[in-house]
Image (cartoon, rainbow, N blue to C red; front, side, top):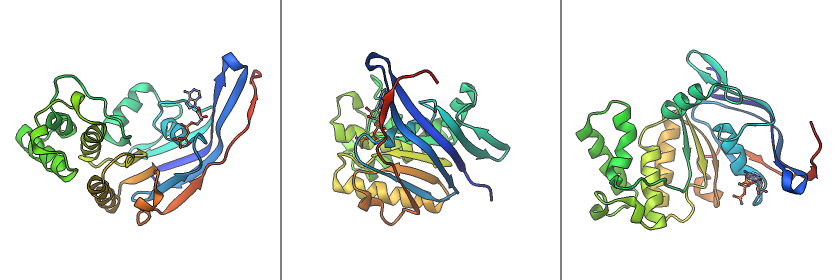
Length: 235
Ligand SMILES: Nc1ncnc2c1ncn2[C@@H]1O[C@H](COP(=O)(O)OP(=O)(O)OP(=O)(O)O)[C@@H](O)[C@H]1O
């Protein structure tokens, strides 16, 4: 079986023009990830963990390196793929889970959660039933299901976000501190869901404030180390 992801010599820096400096987020990262594997990213604050996840998701472009994502039709380099291909992969195969919900005005919590299933062709009543099951699983109170999350507390928004992000198994999940500010019940529900997804073959790369939460899931770890800031000279 080919891997899901092969990352080769990936580097990223930020050009800080106002300071005349360049900040090296990470250098020469390489790893291979197969279906059902869980990779933990570790390291102190500001070392580049979120930046690496965002680069893999192609929210950021790397300075150098390849991000080979293997599909049934061959492999595609996420570092250089066309935006249209990235959009398609994000819709169908690659998920990014953060603690932040982008709540839209006047869309009910249960509709936000059901949307990925509706898009995948699931009939509306079935999608809604499944959405309610996940809202319940993550501990969102029943009387909030028809309400608009724009007014929810931070933790409630996060639960809606997780229910939506994890309702449909994807091939690759990027997890950026999804447990931050969750209560114990929701944290346990999240870990159960991640374990089920892993067993179903979903490959995952995650950053966790408390890695002990996911200790039973981790197959491999990468420790990012602090990089120097250098003078901003032309490359
Ligand atoms: N868009 C940006 N422009 C400039 N610098 C940035 C940008 N995004 C991140 N950085 C810088 O890159 C470094 C790495 O940030 P990142 O958020 O990846 O760290 P992290 O390891 O996830 O930190 P934490 O554990 O605190 O969440 C930080 O010094 C940050 O200020």
